[in-house]
Length: 401
Ligand code: SF4
Ligand code: SF4
Image (cartoon, rainbow, N blue to C red; front, side, top):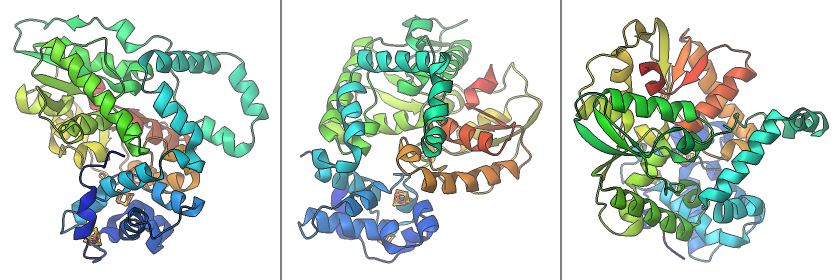
């Protein structure tokens, strides 16, 4: 078994409980085993062989959003996310609750062609009469989960954007672009907006064809061996492209790519940045040629604000759009409850966390909520739809063009 880097920090836990107070799951469940401190104890007991495997234990280990909120509250630098991922890895292939997910992550999501085929089948399902027939036949709890799935694009981003997009005007930088699976297969509009924004601001954008999944879903489910293989493939793709900077418009992918050095135990030949961070900090985005008249609020994705320390740049980007009024929501950096497949595997709990986020969004009176993570976009859009709200959810770069 490959150990999750940082999992050894469990020994530094002083059991003070500061982390429990901020944990979104603990806030909803209100029991010790549902908070980070309890999870660390369970994971440690599992590692020491003091706890037999059980379905209940598996559920507790998987009841974590990996949102990293507890880490920012911990005085001892305990990496609960890594401890949880190590425990999931320990539970491994015997995990009775996630057999189908494990097969998809190991054998489909890790192979771009298979993943594209699955997406194509999904697009056909969503556009044919099969979907409405399925919705009539499925039990209510499955219909709700099915409605969570966003419309899959018929054409991938790769088929819409050339491998090299020149800078419009004078070239100021040459950058690699990593869209991630969701932007490549679902939110192609975000990928096109990103490439357009970068090109407009003087970047030659290199979009390698041989990219794979970033590996975060595999890590989250304890498949560290697959995650490491995917990381090596992506590093190789950008090495061949000869770029020194890699940008992404997916917060989760950015966080995952930033952790490659720990995962691969070597330095990367390139730097990784979020697209908003690069546009503001490196290119010094002064103002946008596009306008947006109205109120926009911003949700901080966990993997951007805590995973990469990017908080101000997306807000600065939004404020540089003429006519746009940025209004802050309460608890903007609290997890939306999406966390990859958490909304599918723990639907009710995920919806409780989401309802709080949606209430905070609606209280701002904004017409649009912007966020830099396609997974958060999916979750928040679903939550707003459930409330019958017309508030739109977009990536900040979409408002730039
Ligand atoms: S805040 Fe840190 S030290 Fe305190 S209980 Fe949580 S993980 Fe342990
Ligand atoms: S990562 Fe998030 S959900 Fe998991 S224990 Fe920490 S605060 Fe709770």
